[in-house]
Length: 400
Ligand SMILES: [Zn+2]
Image (cartoon, rainbow, N blue to C red):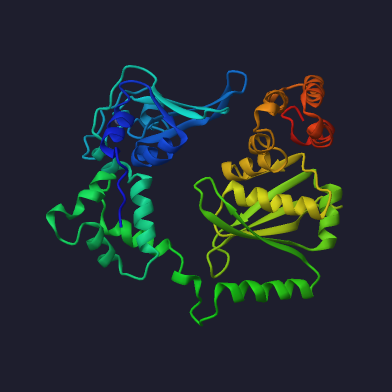
């Protein structure tokens, strides 16, 4: 039921304390980061540094709580007030901050380092008890919650079925403070097993019925599956009315995202792409139903819409969701396209030039880099670089 990574204890210790910078391969990061991730909270967004060769994200210990949730009125008025003594945790208890650097070129590594000399004023378990469990535990709990057992049964089993040594595996992945209500909560949020409805119609039949309905109404639709960043299969369905797609084509330079959560019986989320009509009113032009909100499913949906009409969004209004923003950046050209297309040694130079072009801030420089890339490309690739990169700069470059 629980797989404990081989060196779990060692990595938990070094990733929590960060006495020295820790350099991990992608595989190591995927294995060990979920054991301690709940300790950290992000500060600000990711930034590209060192000529766009590395991506940097800053974190702080959750117990540091620099993100204030409210304003202290007394402090604002300049009065000195004595903190009320409470049993809950004290703000600014811990001062540890951390920087995570991920290289964007092979070999891809993730480096975690503490930003100064301060050390945690608590232990790892205390963080989990106060701030929530790490993803490694949440994942196990969710996998069990999706099965047909009661929360009590699952909790009992995870805790080792009453045997003293039984909960060793759970504790090894950081689940010592797992409570029964954590399981109940996961159970509540989980989808029905086998994806069958109460009246016995399978998910597949449901989707097929919806498709014939859309077809009969002359809507365009496409179903897709993608692997997300966690390598999990995600499902999505994108659909639109041709007449609305014309509006999207004409006016889609300004597009707004709108999302509805748990909109159908499968608890799927729906995204709509809105554009302004002739009267300046936002109307929905295309929709997408996804089983999990992530940038991979969204950007795939946008690719479909683009293939149906010549939609070139220049300004996209999102409701601050990083997923939506990420999806927008991904649709046209992404680092991933670049890596996939130019992974061979012969294309190294082209790869470097186009990567620079992606992140350059002026049109002239971008154009120049693209031309250099065309010249540097092997004969067979040249026209591809010319058509899909040089001539489409405005669609993917950062300056655009
Ligand atoms: Zn701390």
